[in-house]
Length: 167
Image 1 (tube, helix red, strand yellow):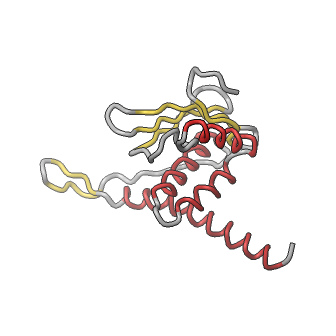
Image 2: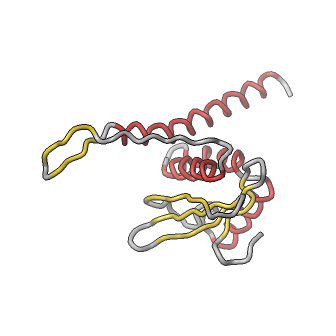
């Protein structure tokens, strides 16, 4: 590998990390600056939200992935490239193959299980180690519920529908 290739990889990795940071930090800054209103009268600044998370936590890991992935897919200019890099970073290789097979069969995005992006998403613990529940909301009352499995290194190993045979 020559230094030119190494430099390109470093630039791509730096851009990916910067995109992830922006995807997480921007919504937090907007939320903190919002004002609460009561009866049309401003009551002052809304209570600031604090997000205290660890990258070693499965719920945090999946929430970070889905947040960044949905933001990337929403970007008409560069979303495709970033979404591909996010998949490579967060999903294990065998899961990437599984998602590609699902996409070939269903002609939709295998991460979102749809052809568009949701309006909102919720990620929560299932109570089972290495497993996280994801709810994607498309509108009222349209939702998609997914179960995401992770390995000990916090890489996604499977994305599926609850109650359907999978891993």
